[in-house]
Image 1 (cartoon, one colour):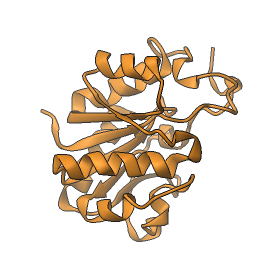
Image 2 (cartoon, rainbow, N blue to C red):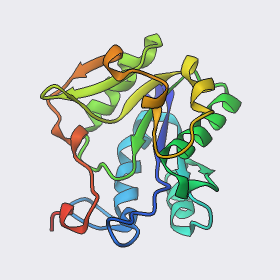
Image 3 (cartoon, rainbow, N blue to C red):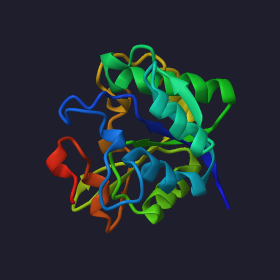
Image 4 (spheres, one colour):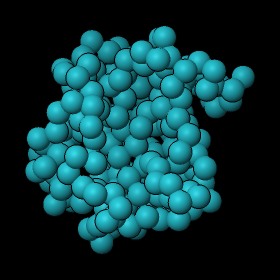
Length: 189
């Protein structure tokens, strides 16, 4: 049964350290990276949205394939904060009460971890999964933070409006919450 929260996947980055569109990278998962990540979230959430940059046919196709709402960030090159602000705009307009924010370059997160973060965030608190004492992603945010998220600029995300040390850290045995893809060598063959 879908969790009564939205999932927002930030996928507007250009992957400059990767050297090409890392969302299209293939690895030990099925299909392109972005498809794999959306496949982790789609079964868990009735409302799934993806923030992409403008002129992004691949992102548009991925949203269509996974029945996700596409949010276009025309200022994507300015950083993650602008993508989160555009996502918050959609969340407010839709009247969504909580969101789980995931990153498009994190394919190793277990679906059980995503579900646990979403469930822990249902009572209106901010939640970050933790592995070996380190917080990772995805993170749950309550609607009370959306007005502040709307003001984000640059590359700083929700940490500009919340002290994550004051949030609930949900201990999990999932090292995938800390592992992302930045460079081609991060993709196992």
